[in-house]
Length: 471
Ligand code: ATP
Ligand code: ZN
Ligand code: MG
Ligand code: MG
Image (cartoon, rainbow, N blue to C red; front, side, top):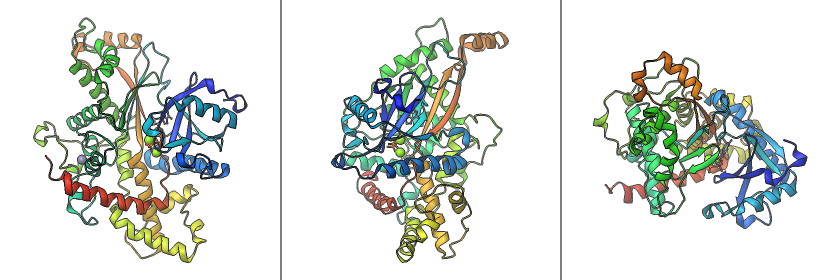
């Protein structure tokens, strides 16, 4: 990428979240992730160009030095900070404005700093040789996959109903979404194929901001916030059909919608459970701990035909769950430690640097959180380590998985078929090569912790008032 010859016509709108807007290159498999800030501040940006550069460098460092070591290097692409010509950024912002969803326009793209994060485009992977059929990429934002320990929570309900399911009631009550999603993260993280299938089916039915499908780099399925309409499932099936038709039977063109959807989900489950190389073991079933079922999930436990074997230890879901579980105290148990750190910093402001409160996110930071004493010895070091662990867990609860499904080329498949039994062909799942990546690994600010506690209280109160009583 020649930074001095940037042309806005080479880039197009790709998507956005709450914090950043992403544009993709029309030819090269690359994206630029630009910062956003509240529209009220559009005239005077909240930070200088140097601060914006620092913020993005922090994201890169956090991802490459901290998250990558916890989640597994093979899943992570940290990217690099780039300094773009301001005129290019201004033109780009004008170009993409009309494609942005209205409900995201309470924030504007940063056009003042000229800084962006340059990343590989994970929706247009080049896994093998290019095939005629474009790859399918599925983005899942799984959210938190475990229940907190009863030791630290004040409300019993938090040990029975997962945060995601409670939050759904809160979001519907506040008009953010029209309908509740029946997706439950504990089903997705269970490692049990039936439960995972069930979870993904509900992600597809009510994708909210947890599920998107891309075909050849274009988003073909997602949901509109605050909208009454459900996303167009028929259109999704129309796109998926060619990928799954021949797998069932090349001659049979009457494969039902249900079969296409089932095959699609099955391939996704396989990809999520695959180890992506290496020989990881399988961990003991968390069911034994009694913390792997959410009472709000509508999955019927009696339906389980095969016991859960748990997640393979080198699967993407296992690594994310392990990192999420660094939150051992829950926000309620963590908050007093946060206050302890805050008070310490008021007395000794210079300690902020030594304790690496705002970074740098380097090996020393990782060591601080990994070498945390097992028991609270009252030291500020212990409190800081728990706060660092909590922030890392928050990032893991908020990240997305991008699963890339690349159809195996025709030749490969035919060779394979000559050597395998032909009769099995009709029932064989379609041949894809898959890979998984993890994206959106920004560090969560230290001072976002009080907000987390307030939100937690609001969600639980709302659930006890409305949700718990509803069927
Ligand atoms: P959130 O609100 O979830 O925190 P965010 O503002 O931090 O989101 P991202 O999730 O990083 O932003 O990016 C927004 C969207 O852009 C993603 O959901 C994804 O669809 C797309 N995207 C981000 N990074 C990439 C990438 N490297 N390749 C392809 N698409 C990407
Ligand atoms: Zn749940
Ligand atoms: Mg995101
Ligand atoms: Mg994010």
